[in-house]
Image (tube, rainbow, N blue to C red; front, side, top):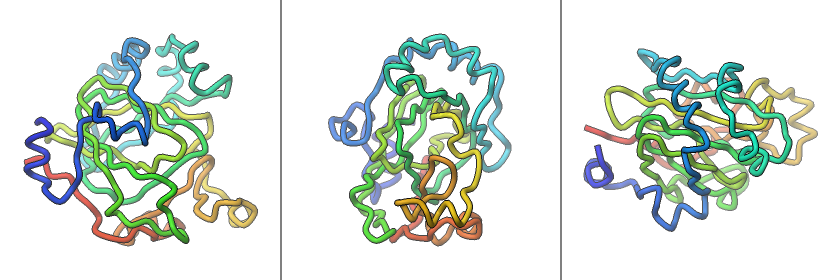
Amino acid sequence: MNLKQLQTLNPTIDIHEITDSSFSAYGSIISDIHFSSYFDYLEKHTEVPATMNQYIAHDPLLWESCHDHLKLDAIFGTTPLQFGYVNGNNSHLNALEYHPSYEINLALSPLVLMLGLTKDIKDKHYEVKHLKAFYIPAHTTVILNPTTLHFSPCKVSDDGFKCGVILPYGTNMAFVTDEEKKASPDPLLFKTNKCIIAHPDNTNLVNLGAYPGLIGDNLMIQYK
């Protein structure tokens, strides 16, 4: 699968190479040489589930495998970090989340990310027409900005995808309480260090308390 094929199969979705200059609004690419051991671990010690996604927020063995902590300190400061991954079969948008911090994604396999900007959230709603999608080749590492809306990667083959995720420790690990939501300056706070807007079609997230504020189709990346 390459970008031209994806664009042909998805004529209504704005898909770009990750090297396109427009990606600078959402994040940046960093050399995978800093994370070669991370990629090795994902390849040898993790699996793609038969259906849906598997998200592991923190795997201590991944922490041991990631030796370039000086590079991470340059990105996150000395904040304690979690080293996890998401492997799976997702093809839909489903939701958009954001964090008050950077996020590193390590694409072991090729995949697509659908991205937006927090500035386009209006009264807890976001129109999916603002989204851009980016094709990320295998063994590519990207940093997503705190102002970047994102969610699960989308697969581009029947094999699914494997993607490492590095975030400040505690992110996604616990739901916030009603009291914490009321005290937060952001009404979309959903879990620790995580705000989210769900698509109304994603009833699982909505039933868990995510605000159904995405306007438009629940976009799907076709790959065949």
